[in-house]
Image (cartoon, rainbow, N blue to C red):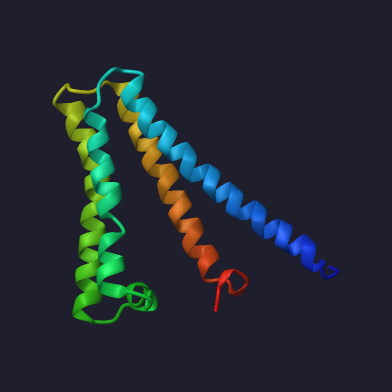
Length: 138
């Protein structure tokens, strides 16, 4: 396969970033629609978990993201993994508990969980893109 020109590579990278932004925007729209379509704003509780989710990584890991991905015995990395896992479980549990209590309907639950899946795909894609050298700033 022939090497692509620099402008073509820059265009492909811009398209990936644009698609990533569209994924995140789609997740936000689904989150808001789950509340607005059913005139019930209780599903917005999951936004708290989405805000809390990156905090352990920012506070305890910093720039050394390799310690989170490794199987080491670093205490802070393990604490970060625990808090991140608890936030992920909370993001799924809050809409499920609201549905079980009869506060939201099946449609809102489906939109909330699909929003979670879209955010998850966007985060995993961002992590995959950030490990590539073309995207690193330094």
